Length: 371
Length: 102
Image (cartoon, rainbow over the protein chains, first blue to last red):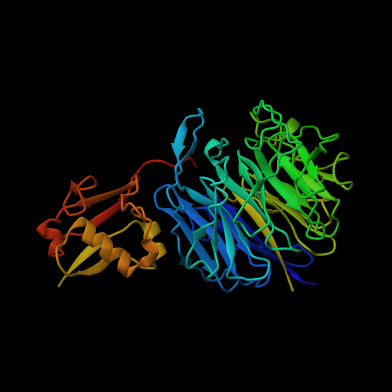
């Protein structure tokens, strides 16, 4: 039947939720790293007991924690994230140059084949890599030193590298996204990077051909179709079928195409999920109704899924890293809110249950499907 | 060789996996910088949590106190008071009551 482990990062610690394959009864762990911001907890796809957590604090800075036993015990590993060479400057909100400053790790993406290799997406935007299980980190500075780097400016939440997607057919090919610099692709394991922007249009970017400046909120990919990417941009839900060389809009009949996460079904590459949010200035769902929208056609045609979700007086947000899918049959979908709820569906989104009701504000959700 | 007492914030005690004050054996001058060096050598996980890895600058929301005196802005080669050197008083590393949006 299998088992499911949900890894939740919140503003005040991490939590691990577990259930058997029925996904009806859930246990919630004590808080891990209580009191710290946990931007992300993620697991190695080849060693389910190997977990990594990004732990940070305004007082004490960045820690990276590692577990080798599925989250029962943890040990800090190296937290020295130092930009390569002379970092120089990028843009501040007002367009003036601002020195690169490391603030935190937003996202940890373990390699698809080696539990000791992990990519870390940082604020200020940079990509780091460890090949020794976190004992040391080195910047893949070709990204930040891309010719556009000095023109990158932060989104409201900071200049964060939040999305890292490794192509399972070629691990040297990696897609990343930065708020609000845009999306990039490497074909050589992170040495050189190409902005992938054709077809992206953003109100705040007057040049329709601008390589960078697009506030990409999240990118999703089904592992069986590594050339097809789905993007939730600041506004607009976008799709590419050529690995990001060009994008077209698939917002279709969504009530609003602003939002943060985008998730692909585990078994159906054309089934995708978003959580529409009212607007960039109103970070809560339209009409006080929390609804996930599902498209079974790879975009454009969307259906609202609200059965079991609050349908009145709901004013939470769902952040970009706070949605995930399990690999059971039927595929389970999970998301966490700024109100501290974790909602889960064990039937592809048709029905939802609250599996945690009162956690701190949720920053990230990952799911492990275990044997 | 002398042994001094260092009090660190609760969150850093968790990181260092200790409870209560930390005892540090000091060889040589007992200065702010030497105490931080000794603390980080004994508990490598604390590197970067009190001062920057590279610049060695104190993190903004960390404060240093000894014998009711704020030593946060003193240079690293500042000797600590006699009462800290002889372990009558602890050297206090404190998380400032500031910041936080949640």
